Length: 254
Image (cartoon, rainbow, N blue to C red; front, top):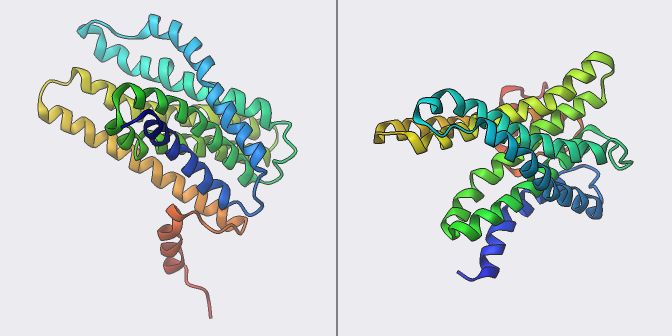
């Protein structure tokens, strides 16, 4: 597969998911502004790398004896928190003074755009290093996982925008720690695969990894569905079944 096809494979998933969220906004955000947030997300790779290097040197486990103890700590603080913190830093620096953010759903749109800007750069590196097979796999796993992390971040910041005082500060803190915790939960089984011995252990780790991804997706579906109903948005395609089940559980009164 040529370089152009690899580039399309790497960039396409992030752009498609960004479009899904943007297209379902009741008052669509300006495309130029959306592109700016995508670029901010791509730029957030730089502080993530610069912050991640010293943390990795301090915490990444090399010996087998320390691996079991330090691996979760390194994944949380050296990978997940660094990446989510970099995304949130650039998102919040721009969004807090952005006049286009005039309803809660806008926080979600822009947070997902930042997350997918980051995911696209990461995806380009992986696809050009490992090939099309990895690109296809990541299109259905890692890229959507970044979008889910962005969804959680944006949902928390949307709640913070409607609150004041300690309640708003709590939501802002959770806008970092909640996606970071899910990010770490997604990455940990994958990193643990390197030291897994038997095929049974590897299968168990893959099952845990899949369960984490599905659980986070389900939480995000419920949250976006509730926000969409509250603000009279039409649900994105991934929420159509959830919306149908909601109507079946709560039929309109005669």
